[in-house]
Length: 311
Image (cartoon, rainbow, N blue to C red; front, side, top):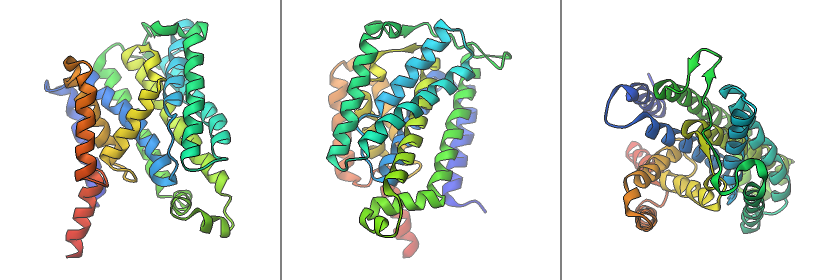
C-alpha cells in the first residue's frame, strides 16, 4: 500500500504526464511552474531543513541561466551540456558564497548572501557577454542527444518534467538520509550538535552547495524554456519571490514549495494585465495566507491530518 505522501506525489506525476494532452493550460506555463518549483524546493532544502535563510539565491538561479544561455548561443553547445554547465556554475558560486556566508548566522548570514548576490547582479549588468539590460536572447533549444527536437514545446515539457522529478528525488533522498537528520539537528539546536562532535559548518556548506546547485539547475532549464536570460533572473526580486513561494506552501515540507510556486506563478500570470497592482495583490494574498496558515498551506494540511489521526 502506498503511503499518503507517496500517493500525493504519484497523483501529481500522473497529472503532469497528462498535462500536454489537454487544452486547459499551455505546456510553457506548466514548464514555468516546474522551473520555479524546483527553485523553491532547492531554497527549502536550505531554509526548511538546515535553518539557513538566504536572500541571495537569485545569484545561483540567474548565474546558471546566463551560463547556459551564453554557451548555447555563442558556443553552440547542446542543451544537455548547457544545462549541466549551468548547474555546475550554481555549484561553484554556491561554494564561494557559502564558504563566506556560513561564518555568520541569523540575519547576518542573510545579509551576507544578499550582498554577494548583488555583486553578481552588477557583474551581470556590466559584463560584455551578458548583453547588459537586454540580456541574452534567442537562446536555441537545440536537439537533445541529437535526436529530440526541443523546439517542440511538448518534447521540451517532458525534458523539464524529468529534470524536476530528478531534482525532487535528490532532495527527498537527502532529507531522508543520515545527512538530512544531522541538518535537522543543527537547525533545531546547533549548540547541541556541536557538543556531539559534528562539524556544523561543514554540513552547512554542503547543504548550501546542494541548494545552490539545484537552484542553478532550475535557472539553466528556465533559460532554455523561455530562450532568454535577463537581469530579472539575478535581481533580488527573484530571491524574494522564492522566499515567498517556500513560506506560502510550507517551509520544511517537500510538497509545500511546489504548491507555493504554483500559486505565485499562476497569480503572476493571470494578474499580468494589472501592472504594478499585481505585486500589491500577491502581497495581500501572501499576508492572508501567513495569517491563516502560519505553517504554510501544506504544513497546515499535514498538521490537520496528523491531528485527525491522533483522534
